[in-house]
Length: 137
Image (cartoon, rainbow, N blue to C red; front, side, top):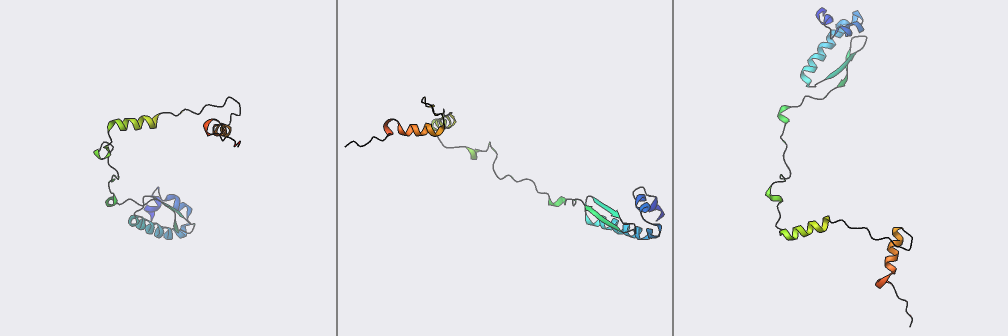
């Protein structure tokens, strides 16, 4: 017990506990060390009571099992894999890319005022060939 008390890691614990309770602290520390060796945790934060009992305040992560490692399995093929190639003819593919990537201009605003989008579409529906003509007969 004297060597344990002189250890710089455990000296503050013995200073915290009353001298009559040192055997309880010694017994609790031995239990903690044996448990820590068999439990497989990376870090353990422990504290003591003034009577010498040791309790665990925080448990860290478990040490990972080396046999549990599995390499990453690709779900999709690489981008340079021929599975991504296409059978679409090149001119059609070029046409599709130019049509889809071409910027669409915004419709021109009305010169008669009312610059909101609602009035713009309302004016498009009521002008020209799509306008309803009143029945005069």
